[in-house]
Image 1 (tube, rainbow, N blue to C red):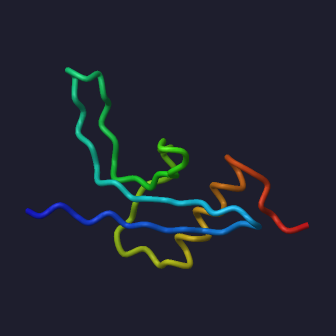
Image 2 (image 1 turned 30 degrees about the vertical axis):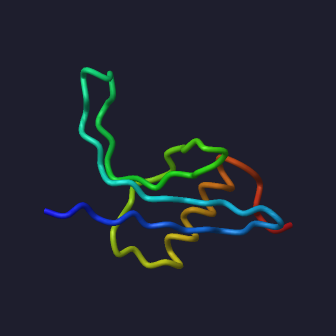
Length: 82
């Protein structure tokens, strides 16, 4: 079975751009002390990645962008209009 291709989304908020990448699920690895992770969206920044939310293949892009913006608002910065 072929590995699913990663998806990417770039969202601009004000003068800042945020880059999100999806990764396939990861099985646990006891030798590396890594727990299993479901397929997830990650925020990419400064060579690091932070888990955001589960990746749902085929998700509507407007719905996805809204969910990513909600996460940014709750976790990173206040992006709500005043």
